[in-house]
Image (tube, rainbow, N blue to C red):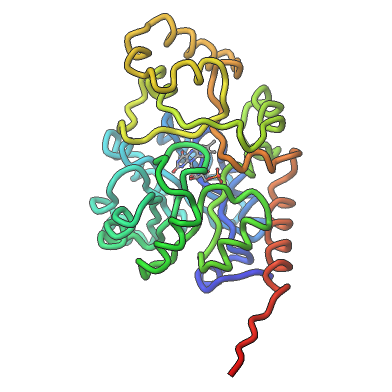
Length: 322
Ligand SMILES: Cc1cc2nc3c(=O)[nH]c(=O)nc-3n(C[C@H](O)[C@H](O)[C@H](O)COP(=O)(O)O)c2cc1C
């Protein structure tokens, strides 16, 4: 058993959350993680809809399991019904990222739901805590998917633990029991883990992407805006995403303005996405992807991370000389 004050306050058996990954973390993955004792999160992602939130939430809820939902703040600004649907789905926690949470805090709290948000620096953490976020996620630059490419997980986590009173979860690069033990030893209330769950049988990751993920190593990722520009997704321009390198993405990273005007390249990219051709299309993953060696059920990952971290953390006892 591994617990932190925060995880036991939520009734979790272990302080592990799967990150709300759009296109990867649906209801099946969330249910498996919650069933294993952590908190499963459903990711709505860039193309999330009310229908997706309702359908995927029904899976853990139908099994009597707690779960969370992650929404993109800018998408909620465009389509407020996404937040209505998330609240009506009765999660224990809603994560709103990539926007200030202030406008939504009261609604989420009135429904008795915790509000989490990912931050990338001290200023963002202070702002989120000041606006009333219940849970601050220290999201380092090595993490998969969207974020800022500024501060790595450990320096960010150390700074935020001294900075805010709210529980701080660590995200970015937790790819084994060792990583989980490290952030818990530092004082994190839990690990918010994405990449490690990418190839679980319960995840929505397309079959064709899985072998590429399993072959990747710690230097296989790149931070880019090229995907959002190619697809015309309305992501705020300060956010890029960490993905596996491929020829298209390496060619256009840093050349996004040119890409915006190159219809042929953009059409080729959207066709590759439609066809599931991951020689061109993106696969979001963090630097911990090199630690992912096989496709295992979420339950095994949660158990191994949790038991392994408990073992590592019990190996030393501090001795104080008086
Ligand atoms: C495939 C993938 C999709 C993601 N989609 C989302 C998302 O829809 N919403 C969100 O808040 N974060 C998303 N993220 C970021 C995660 O919440 C988290 O910050 C990240 O996975 C942590 O780093 P790690 O991948 O090294 O564990 C995504 C990450 C990945 C790998």
